Length: 436
Image (cartoon, rainbow, N blue to C red; front, side, top):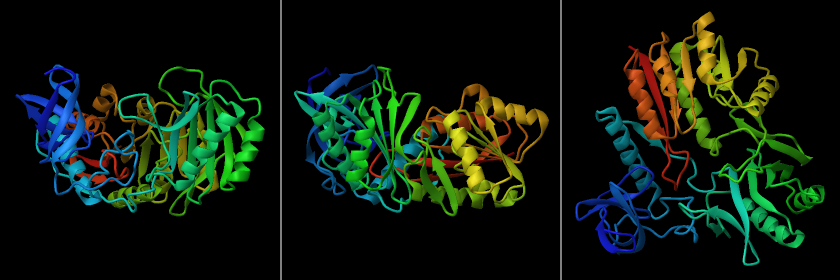
């Protein structure tokens, strides 16, 4: 098999990241936008040592689960993986593929609860980062085609609020009219509907104030406009320097009765309604530990620390991003919470510092997709606490870290999936590990 070959493939299953897998002359071939049981025609795009990647040409024998995608950009845009099937069926596919990879890594078959459905599988994302570029005299803005840096010029997106696309169109028009050198358009929406817009640029714009005021006039829901300077030519979207051009410094998000003020440089979950469901589940799991002491690692703006504080004696909220740390301090004050202690630094170091001076009852970690450092997960496997709650959007690294934690003092007791990202291949898991 070589690049450019056209083949017919029977899809056996969906694997992690939403790709369909089949065998051609005994060799593994994977492709996007297919379903189990389908016969499809592909062109081979890449050949690796152990597998090949194909691009879908057409579906010869479709699955009864196949439907027409909602978005006209679906087969070009890299944002979604499962619009070609029902929401119920994509949940089944996500569960099967994620548990399969976790079982393989753990060396035993595991089961998990859920995944818990998202309240709304459409228009749920409160954040978008649109690359902007010029091509043949036309300004393009949207998302990258899967696996490339080729921009799909969006005119719609059923995952984001429609106003995001309206703002994108307005910005593209003004990039053309004003001859702006814009790299990315970064939009966030708060729970009240207020919007924060950040222009990511190579260098600060001369007429940014005028641009911001024009944007706010066109879209009154825009309450904050920033400029972010990113001179790096890499794939990182945001630079370190944010400049408030007009409006409010922070955007309000709300989970239950807790208010979070979030800066443009701080992380916050894109599906707030489902985040509330996860928070309520964790609080219920922790009911035996009411009145205890907690540590919340990779805590961000205090997303879990603040809700946990209500049923705890006190706790620590650890975060290394200085912008998020400042937001967490503000959020503690705004919500009049007095039993959360902020620790600025790496979770890997701060947990050890805390344990040198005192004990605590349980640990919550919500690390990046890469998971925990091996040295840190090995250290955690030996500590003497009652419970570890591990939140992850990457089943592979979650399983890897569970395996290390289970080599020591802990055992996996509960695993529940939550669909924070409908129409995509991603799923969020909450793993509960108890002391043996």
